[in-house]
Length: 459
Image (tube, rainbow, N blue to C red; front, side, top):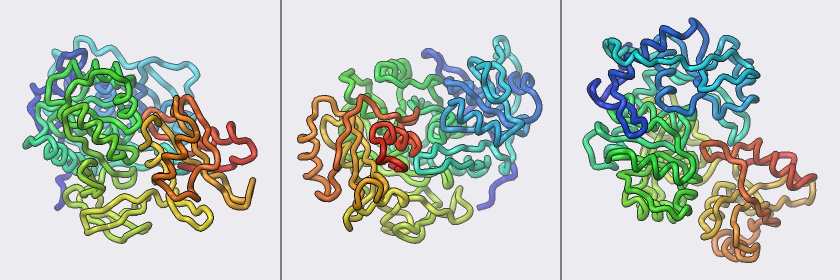
């Protein structure tokens, strides 16, 4: 089905409906439009925009203001000086709009202007955005290797979010998302947070909490301030930390997880704690969001409407809907039919230890399924540098669990040849804000803790 030449910036609800919630108070869509026009008028002309803000509403304003100027937003995995320096080299005309301007930033920056008093301004009609307009240039995290830059166009995003909103509404048992509020523990500048908190509200008629609560007590407080129905958008890492906090958790109507496969045990704990279903999202930067599953109902994933799969194993592609051209997936899939599959692991994390094939994601899954393991990851040293056959190493955050206990649990789950040669106990793993562990960070950790063994490694 062909798309119109332009599609609205906001959809799914009237302008009096909330787009955001701040400190327990709603911010209407008309308020957003009035502030959007004021911000667009205050911005310099030309250049992609980097919104350096922890405030989801400010991020949405920056997104819309750049689009009104015919520019895109830059979406890096983080805002470290190194990442910003790389962005500045890739996009020399870029500038940052920041909560607080850092004087040593590698690109020009300015603070978010005060928009007080603009709320009473004329909101006007909802802007129409060219479907071919590049809305965002996404810099990947490098969790599976070298980071890359991917352009996201408005038409494809609208189609993708429409399919995602339909699936979320299905799990909520609602006809649409009007009146639903999303709380995200993931930042808005990460593709998952961008799609599943900001865009799903703007295009699906829902609203989002402006803050990004990180610590368990903050997540609980954020949920408590919001009316139901409410949806928690999180990651396995954040979810596990929350469930192990011992805090009384307020009920939600749906929990959404992504960035790494979730164990059925953790999913079951989450559903019991929140009194709601848990839905996982499968996707990648290249194709966007592709499929979902309710983890407690089994390992099968179901693609979004309009998407079909082809190939099998390490050679799977997806096409249709918001993916106009067949796009390779970086995972090993067991394709059951053209809309259903099982996820077996990443194609670039397959390992061979003494003739036994597995994947690091498979080993990580079993390690993190052990009671008492707060976090953990397997790493495989390069073969030949220390011994003829490289043996896995496990970095584990598991206070109170002895090495022998961990090995005994792993023996029940994985082949003996894949057991870790060493188990390194840590207080925490160097994950990023979305709970991912980029390859470079893991390699640096291994180089620091295992000098002489670590020239490379991925997880």
